[in-house]
Length: 168
Image (cartoon, rainbow, N blue to C red; front, side):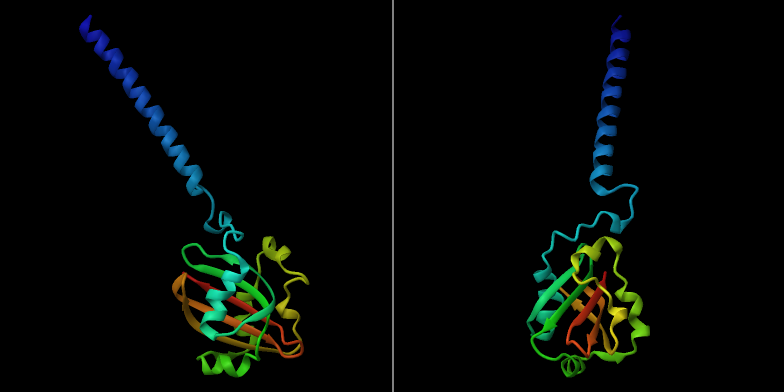
């Protein structure tokens, strides 16, 4: 009888341990986004647009801006999209900060905004609609990454600036 009760107790304990392990695994899977792509779970509402601007544009260039709108991710790197009117013209400043002037077609793909972020911009995000763009690019670092690329598109007609920065 003693052997049988130990066997039943062992089986019950093992079942309990397996159940607890399964619950822990499921909880981890749910919290870590198991089965989803990296960008599906990223919530761009966590980092305010003013902070996105501060770390990617304002600090490196020492400027301020008005009419600031933006969106993006800042988890394990960054993917940030901003539109603003700078406190000073940026063309010469970007060159002095080491940015290279480049044709729009060379960096246009970086300005493609995910559909779910379109609502963050009014009027709609449309850098390809700029008639006289002047574009700049540079490898960059900021508080979210040590290696990224920042691109600027200056609308020469309106003074509005589109920014996209991405890094890991």
